[in-house]
Every structure is written in structure tokens, then in C-alpha cells.
Length: 209
Image 1 (spheres, rainbow, N blue to C red):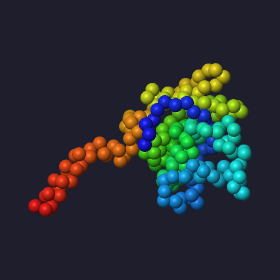
Image 2 (image 1 turned 135 degrees about the vertical axis):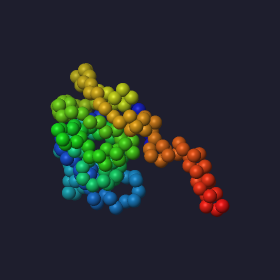
Image 3 (image 1 turned 90 degrees about the horizontal axis):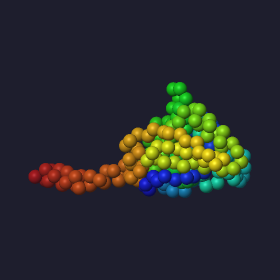
Image 4 (image 1 turned 120 degrees about the horizontal axis):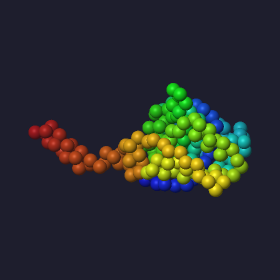
């Protein structure tokens, strides 16, 4: 997993609540046992016409979102099944960050989706509904909207009309550290490789004694 570094990227704002994992990676894309090639599956039911051509009305196909790396949605993003393919599709399309609002008792993200994102190097940012409304307002223009994501300082900055709009966000310290270090669960375990080897050797010796 690559280290998460401060970057500036284009925003793609999908104005829908309850975007579930079937929308992110529809079931027909779950047949592959490989962890590659899922980028084109992202939003495929909305993204393509019946003949396979691009749906020009869907936001991800519009010129202003080409090369986007910051995905913005509404509340309860990533609900539905626990399929990790949904996160693979988000990541392999080029998104490094997903932003969504918490509204009352409705979470910004489904827990499993949020956890899968952290394990795959994607930062999930929870803002309040007013802040996300402002992002959608800024993204409504024809020109690309850019945002700078600084995980170290936990600041999301939008650049528009020569000015900056900044939002601060919270993140679990353990998730923040793993993202900044580029460390997934396996890499975290390998930090203790010597201790694991010693334990296994001791256990093996006890069994053969």
C-alpha cells in the first residue's frame, strides 16, 4: 500500500444518498478472483448505456471530472453488502478520498465500507451536511473543482475563483498512522516478524519435546 501524501486533485460529486456497494461494483463484476481491473466497474449501471457506450449525463463521464481523485457523495455511502470489490473499484478508478456527510443518526459511511477503505489506502472524510452542501454548490459549475487533501493536518481545501474554502476533519489516529505510513494489515503484522518466528519456533519445540 502506498503512503498517503498531501495532494491536489479533481472532485467528482455524485449527488445521491445511500450509494450502496452494488452501485459501486454491481454483482456481474464479482466473478473475478483477481484484485485488479475493477476501475471500469465503478458505477457501471449509471455510467454506461445499454450498448456499453458512456452515458454522457452521468457526472463521472463529464469533462470537468476527468482524472478525478476526490469522490463526494451523500450520507450512508457504501451501505449494502460487505463486498470489498466496491472499494477496489473506487481505488482502481483513481480515487484516493471519499467524502460524505453525517446527518442526524444516519452515518456518513457504512462501517464495513469505511474499514475496507482504510485497508486499501483510501481516506474517508466525514463532514457535516452543510459543508457537503457547499461542496456540491462549488462543483455545480462547468469547470473542474480542485481540492487539496492534507491528512497530516486533517484539512480539506477547495480551490475556486482564486480563493480557498477549508474544512477540517477528524480521523481515527490508528487509521491516520497506517495511511501515512502506507501500512496495511499484513505490513503491520510483519513489524513483529521476529517475535512471530520466535514464538512459532518455541511452540514447535514444545510439541516435539
